[in-house]
Image (cartoon, rainbow, N blue to C red; front, side, top):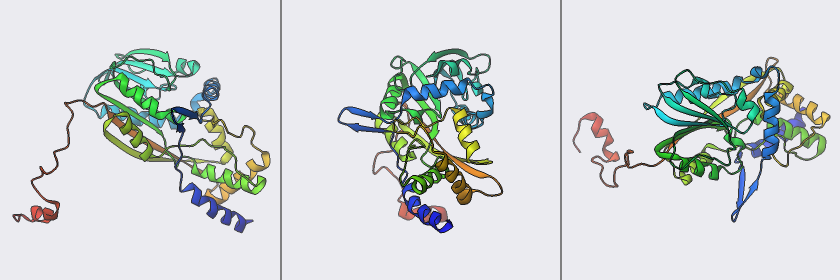
Length: 329
């Protein structure tokens, strides 16, 4: 049994290391949707009705705080700000009046929006039900758009990015975080191996995620400049695979791809839990990796710093050693 799992893992590890997932396919002018947005709305609404929903907010709370902290790093007070896909206020509750004057909190789920925590006193706040794929804001009306852990469910990211830059004023900023391609790779590989062993094939259990290069390319194509990109990995331990799956459901992060497997075979589930524990478990716990991609882009403006013209440099890189030693070129 151990040898069979090891051989199968080697086979699938090759596929998993090439995790270049795309959420939207374009053929001509037609967009092929990967995610069932109505199913996602139902999942988020159900998660908002859980009695102890706060228990499942630990991941989104942490990432939201980190995004909000990056707003403070910008030495500017933004007049009109939109929190796109605010959830239960994971970013908004940390926003300070010194940084933001007017805040519009948006989410596709009205029940989730009603639970969203507000920022500190002094920030003018309004709430609005908004589909991230169809932004209702006027052109050149916003100074900052922020988003945390919601854009990975958008089918047409290029369109959403273009809508954001249209809504921003010149020198306006777009800042956010979303799950990257390495997210839940342990769970993905375990389920794939279990499917192969028990059913002789593969099924879709976990949604696809994008890579940092994809996000940077899409932001650049949309027209954003002065891009800043970085990634972070949050490693969370769970007693078993079952607690991980239960928490994902509580977060409203169930798979909502159109080709998802709606009923998980019990034998596959038990086999996946055993494989997960054998391949990744240690000291009675199993790890789950959440890769977070952070990004910041600006709408172009003449006042922004620009690169020097080609050939205007005063020193050559081949003589960089002479600069530190005090020698002349």
